[in-house]
Image (tube, rainbow, N blue to C red; front, side, top):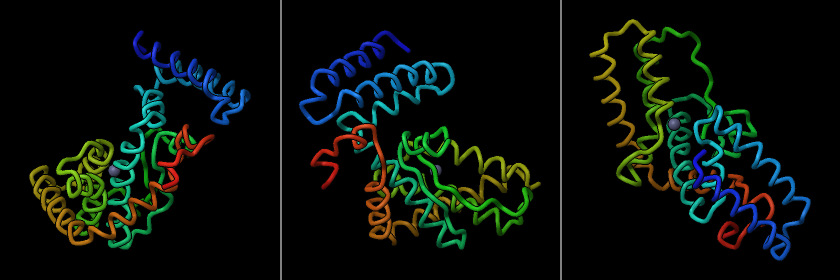
Length: 217
Ligand SMILES: [Zn+2]
């Protein structure tokens, strides 16, 4: 935790204590926020690689755009998973939603586990499309992807366990990425709808107590 970030946290807490009551934030809530923020900061610094900072970033003005990007990524996973016959489970958008679900991430979508670790080539292709769909969705809308490091790691592990050569794995993943981008481009309005639905359900620290007009809209 850098001194600058500690300063920002202290400034936020002070602002919360001063302005909170005038915007309907009760003193009890402020106490809870202060306590959890202080605990959160130390946990964050020790284990979570800046995740407490993510939590704050999502609560600050501009956090909505960040959540929208995460929702878009997860929407890509959901659409392609459904298309591939893998019924996706619940999706969490944002660090707060992930914390509540016990996940150390900014966003996640639960998928049914593959039946065995050693997948057939057909299943590997299907999982490649599903796992690359989050990044592909970001590329379709923004021209580049920010998230997806976990997806890439999991995909690398699945291909690693499969016994296929590294060259095949690379070739197949590139092909899957192209296919999925193309498909999502065709399904752009479905992608936008799914993203909006996920975003509407995303909790953030700010929305816990006072939904702003922008959040309601
Ligand atoms: Zn992903």
